[in-house]
Amino acid sequence: MRARARISYKKQTLLILLLLIVPFLICLLLYNLYTANTVVNANILQENKSKLRVYSSSFEKNLSNIHAFMSTTVANDTNFKVLGYKVGKLDAFLSANEILEKSKNVMSMYDIVTGFFLYSAPNGLMWNEFQLKTETMNRPKLTEEVQGMMQQGDFTPAGWFVRELNAESYLVRVFEYKQAYFVSIIHLNRAAQLLNVDGSANANALLFASGDMRLLTADPDLDPSAHVLTTNSSGKPYDTTKVGEKKYLFIQSDFGVSGVKMVYLVALRSIWANMDSKQLSLLFSSILCLLLVPLGYYLLNRSFFSPFKGMVHTMNSIKDGNFDVTMSNQSPILEFEQMSETFNEMLQEIKSLNIKTYEQMLEAQLATMQYLRIQIRPHFYLNCLNNLYALAQNGDYKQIQEMILLLSGYLRHMFQESPYFVSLADEMRNTETYVELQRMTQSIPIYFSADVVDELRDFPIPPITILTFVENSMKFGMYQNKSLIIHVKVRLLKNDAMNYVNITILDNGKGFPEEELNRLNSEQTGEDSQHVGISNVKRRFYIQYKGKAILSFSNSNGACVDIFIPYSEPESQAEPETNNGVV
Image 1: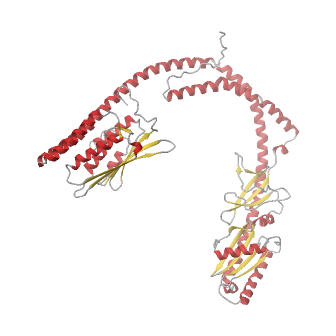
Image 2: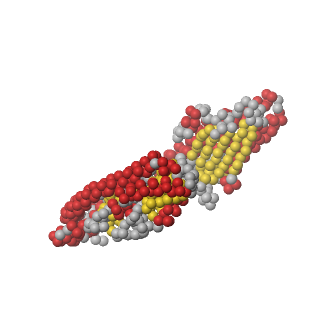
Image 3: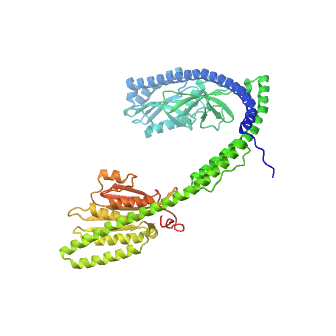
């Protein structure tokens, strides 16, 4: 077999850089050309920003003057106040006519006003005065919709607001006195055309848009299907937007109407239009040189990227616990081949050490589990013996007999059960037996109830889990002359990430002190002298479920313990595998 050629990575890197450096210089020239075009557009942007400020200032001044006229009329004109009361039709007409005459003079000064409306609710009368240059508009329809808006009270009393009338966007200002209304409307499309007097000549468009850039007006030079503007800065000192197939510089300005923006679109000049024949020749030469870049990338990927990617993949597999992988040594670079061989030898040594370490860990877990079981069970047995002693002192031999029968049955079951897991149904039976034993010795009534979903009755859990928390409720939850109520609820919680079996133990006792809650809800699994049983359950769960099970302690009219155990479907549900007797 012919040996593969090997070269130093330094020589390989030099060859690749030689292929990349010339195209890089050409790309730099193109970047300079592109930057020059960007500067031109930035200058155009500044020029048109000033123009938009003029438009915005003029429009805002017109709105302010119209507002001043209307507010003065409402506040000081007795003719308007007459309309707020029930009067004769002739008096109402004369008063309205006086106001509309003044409105006509205002419209002659401010072309942007589409019309003024007067509505007297007590008299049920409506008057209007339209701008002379609005004959093409559906005036009756506008009057009808404005009247309906006043009758329904569907308007904003403070400031200008946008309203769709006759399927087009208008700025509306409403003043009200008692039940008389003075309304002004401005057709936004017409206002934009009046302001942008030189826009058609240079294909620029002045528009009004909402805060989310939904267009409120249209322009004959724009694509009629455009309804929403989306901007893109692409790292440039200006924003651009695309309407149909055309691209524009995007400039916006706020003015005195909340939620409405004035937008100016400036036709974007193509970079080709700014280039002469020499620049075009340089561009095409650069494109030819750029064809070398894929070749350089191929060599770089073959010599460096792929080997590095293989190394990363191998290390990630090892991180996930797969020590059977090896690093490929197919790279043409000599140094990579040497690195692969050395790494594979180190990995083989790590595998040998890891097996020994894992065996030692299993032995330590076995010792810990045996210690925890020994510590939990005598704790319960001693409590039972204390209860028997108390019954014997009271001479209650019948209860002693019943209690011994219950206790013997319980112990027989405990000695026969699996040392690591029992079914949920068995755990509940043991718990109910314990409650019966307690009822026989306590003077305070004890009420115990359980609500378990049938499909979970065979679900495996560590033994004495529920019993430990019920025993804790017995110990700390009893009040003098108050019945103790304990309720256990088991439910299956499903979500996309992971399914859990939720076991809730509630009582009506005093609950956990705040300081103990903080300690119990901490991630510490060390010993707790006051809650030995709970501490042991936490440690057993940590070992058996590898930290995936959750125990939560809280107060809810008493102590509340929530246990969340990972759940898999019944066909794959089984006790965790054991090795040398350790889960």
